[in-house]
Image (tube, rainbow, N blue to C red; front, side):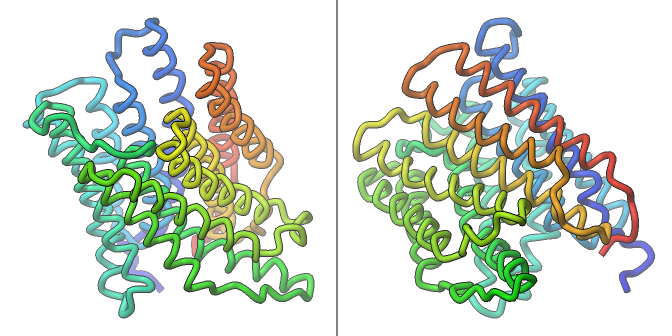
Length: 370
């Protein structure tokens, strides 16, 4: 039993916050890009906020399972303060410590335990991955302030989104087959290819190669090849997870769909460099489809599990997954045919999906927390 001063309810705070942030951030960005709001957000700031605000809130709710109440409050306030930085536009001396506080704290409470407990590289990889977000935050602030000229030269995926894509490949590759095996077992079926270490290493190595090329701004073709390997490894793993046997398990199907978008996003990132495809397609396929759908499924599913309810997606969550898939495809179409109606339709689908997720999360009965 946890000590009475610790709580396991970070998901109750961070999951709805992530959904609400996601619901607000995209309309604000569209309004700023359309000249309706004088926010001065660049595309880089928009991409950064979707990672630092939305993605890392989901990661925090998932990984921070044993915190004191004071630490939970500090983590949430640090996350919230980081979201106010782009609105206030403070000087670097203030912006950098405020923006870096939450990813640093996340590494302290969630990343370090992976390093301590991971006796093999099989699990220890998550520690450095979580810690890399702090370094990415620092580099982003230094580039934004002009101290670091230019920035990473390579890649269709921003560095922080590539980190998220690597995290989704690695963590999704552990969580999804385990959940799939359980769902199949309930139907007296067996998942034969649950552990696929070679394909897992192929995905991780490819994504790391892409990140190295992107951060250093060298050998973009080699980085593109890494992205292709990362995506191919993920899609080959997915092909062995017996998706067609799960049509009566929407919570698992949603995870499979999200992983499909992740692998496809990595493939498109590599193809963008090698074939000259529109650079905006890959980050939105991975970010909206992969991150959005996997985050939605994981937020709802883990909330239900921790509240001792059956992990069955409510109708609102299923609708959100469908809307996110639509949002991803519309935004990818807008990369080829830039058109405001497509952008607005994609943004509207994303926003409505996030509002549905927030409603689902905030209206669930609160029972014991596992």
